[in-house]
Length: 552
Ligand code: ACM
Image (cartoon, rainbow, N blue to C red; front, side):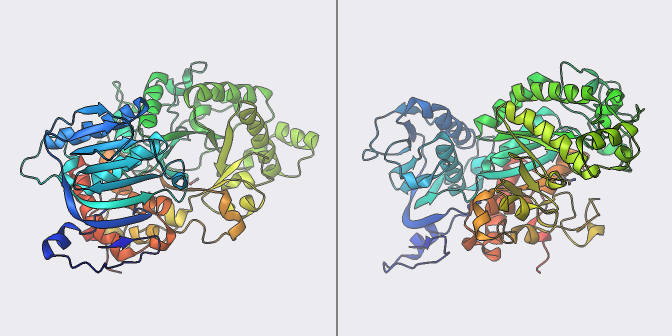
């Protein structure tokens, strides 16, 4: 018998286990590693007659979701039935139960018990049951992820007892759809694997200098003009992408219906979407469409090449705030989650310095420099977000000139400690650990072109070594919502390449966000990766092979 606890202790029981049983009790390759996993002897075999049982109508969707996956690869029917509470009678079945749940498991935790007779998954929420189902899939051979029936596979899982809950409640992935547009089915594909690895927050970077991707009914030019460019830019091969509209322009956008469908698709997988509407900088695409909200009046082009972008809103024009508040009002209706991301990063201040109106506004409001003007801008927006019952989150720079009362900070270049010590929530996403647009190996020549500023390389091992609470005093820990990987797409011009940059680094992020810090073990993680690569192959997901990982 082996027990895996948060202390990563391996306990060998006194029972003499035959070599066959020992083989059956091999540690399964689960990512993220569960908090408590006790292997027991024996296996449970799925058969044609295995049923899926629920003790609550509310659990039907979760049970159906698992049944659908199991049916596809095994070809077995997995008939679903309702039962009342007890698991004493479980015989060749998988029971989802919301009764007799250990309340210490929290809002996303679950227990999973595999015996020779079947599986019992207990949780107090559907999210918990859903995560139990994801773990169950990882107890089975990787072929379980095939979308077509597979013959000659022993559909069995080792007997085990698992108790599991996440370390953090924000386990995120950010996708930049502004530099490169990923269509609805591409986004859904990324959401699928997030759910499989228990990530629960999709940060959707919807607007930037190069593109505006969300339909706003009141301002149609945002997508008519801001959604398209005449070429791919960033010196990329135009043939590397498929994101061309019918007229040959590069780009695209999501209609509000697309967005509603993606939000529902994510919710069914217990993923909350955090939309990002960038302001006051990184706004060239918006100002290409509506230059009247800039300081200079334009013209602006959501340019085709990398370079200096001066698209920055004019805070001295009241109509700028009406424009942004009208946009945000439509955003609130589309996204039900608590957090709205307003960007706030990398705002060039020269435009405000050179604007007589901005300088007059600063004098009127007693603002001593453009950083305070930025803070004044962000505070106004934060008031509006709060008045609408939501919470604002922004990048590190929203700390400049003073942080608004209710704002959360996404740390990419620092500020977490300052924000947390003032009682603000933080999401840890530092460049050197969490930026997935950088090379995965120091041998850049052997890799597809990637971002090369800053650290230049963020290896899998580097990501895996990240501890979100390492640089924070213990009293700040409660303010860490969690952690997030960010895929910026200046160089990422198609889905296959995005997948390659996300995997295997998403595995490390999943483990950092969910598993105990004390269980971190690089070699053990690597051994589990190889099985997870097989899972990705079954799904048809591209990834950077672990065998390409340098030994050191
Ligand atoms: C950022 O990477 N500019 C947040």
